[in-house]
Image (cartoon, rainbow, N blue to C red; front, side, top):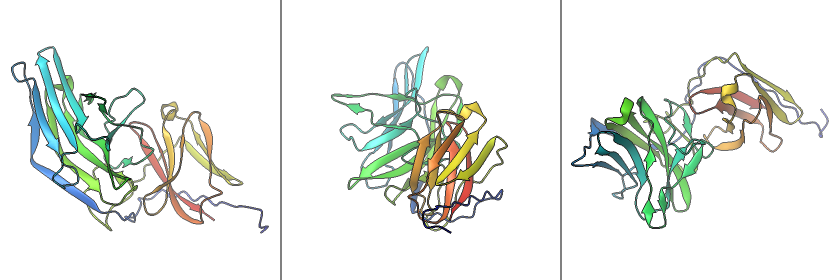
Length: 269
């Protein structure tokens, strides 16, 4: 093999991933679940979340109902703190993530609600059950990712908070719904995706996604520590990732949009 030739062997195995990502998760099960129900005489009903259990409030969840025709499920960063953020879609709304979807740097648009003298609300979509909000807080200058499990019925007539979790490892993604500490955290279960075609050419992983719903989504490569090492927005059906700078070994390729995700093992040689 010529030294100037960089060969990549991409192996796609249609099996369930083994539990190999090592993270340390602090999980809080809210038992019984907390359901917020506000009304016109008491328009705000709050839940104060300390996601990393350090006795400091990080996020404030609220049910807002100033009238029978105006009700919302809301989430705020804690007033006066610009080191907390929620992940949003391109429309500026919190993303209701499915179980096992990774939450990390490239999950969406990260946003802090505190601006100047105001603390704006983010409206959580209604009609969702057992979905996860992607959250992160900054400690010692580094981001730590987490989630909150919630229900919001159609019409946002209430707001239920079921639990939340926090990854103590800095700058490392966490899976939505992950409640187990090191070393049992696992990669999301792989699903068969007929419209995903992956092949290699030189120092690139070439990806062809024939499902247009993935346009605007994210393709991400994770190392075995669960850290994102390469990411690109999916602007067209055919795109590629340059991996010439990655070390040889096993990685995971995730292709996802706001509601779907497909993950494959990738071996770079």
